Length: 312
Image 1 (cartoon, one colour):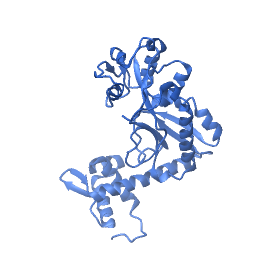
Image 2: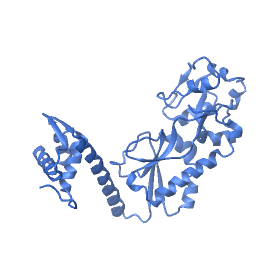
Image 3: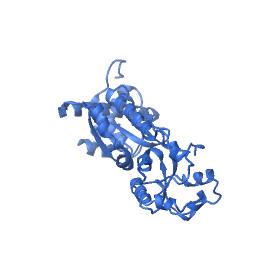
Image 4: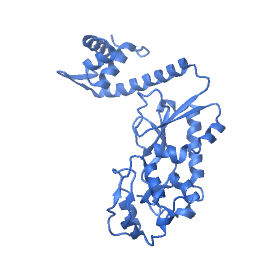
């Protein structure tokens, strides 16, 4: 029977469909749900009859989603995530709104943890928890993460992405090492530290600085960029860093910007969250607070690192 406009499909069939689509296999879905494979097949057939369209293409043991199936899976996972989060909140008996934020470890260590007391003072009714992680959160599946700060270009599917700051990048090093650097080309003899091997920003920066040779001594000392900035602080290399991440160190004199040649960063920090939660006051408060803190962090810093010349 095909559903009427205001009817709901069998929620049990929807749950079975999500498991089969996510796992790509009826047998694995049956194991996860602790039912038989034939029961999974029957529930999927029931759902297909109710919606009036095929959701899977079957090639023997192989299983693939149809175009409609892929679209419906996104809707189903989004809806189930809302139910999971709502259930967790209600039955944990929470007395105040909770906000768990997934953040890169380097951003937590060098910037966010120094400022969370201000957010807690301004929003004493919100229980804030920071989760340091490199993994991109799948909000359709994660019930314990409410939002995240991601580094990238802001074009992730299935999330709302709000720019935290239009930041810049430039070299930083220890004051002792800076005294040995007379011109940008001198950096070629130093160890140049990068945050991610997939993003080569040293070469474009060198070109903008008028260096004809390609930097060769580029290395990734650690997965954690906080470790690499600490190495730069100790004089063990020069890091290409974003202003927001090192502004506190520059003000304190722990790091130095040897050349006032900042470039606008091609990857930025974004505050991301599920689209269906865009109207939640807690997320709106965190988004506004992050932007205000980021702007305050870099206020007046052009005197130290210079005016941006271009975009990488």
